Image 1 (cartoon, one colour):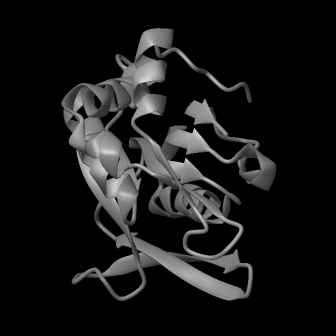
Image 2 (image 1 turned 135 degrees about the vertical axis):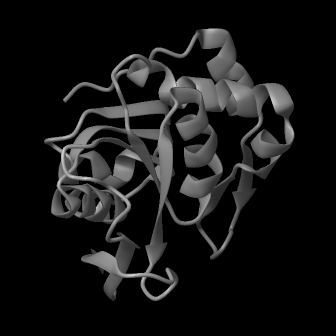
Length: 182
């Protein structure tokens, strides 16, 4: 599905200007994209939240699923802006009530993501939000969790796509909206 970028160029420039490159973090040869300056810049943070939710305004989003941990930072204000509830998708064992889970592959092993079993009512329209789309494993797991709960995924909205890692290939059935592609 197409990448739907609707954020004005001036806002994208402001957003991009507030993402810091940190060479050799967390390992030598990695160029880490640090979003903490963006979070600390009121206008850039507001532009990011607005850009993440813009394509979904008026589409009747019932819930926003935010992926642990930085998806929480963006997902909660996106949910508020859309008049929707917020559902945290957490690593296994972090939620206190009954959960549904979905395992996904990592480079060396597997991980599991969970939501509360009662968080998404059947038939709910759900937007998934995260900061980065990398390999797509966590995103695919979140899509499967929404389906297990009986919800419909209306889209997946991310601040940044690391295009070289080809994560969008794991989400061919989902409308993917990215603000930045690096």
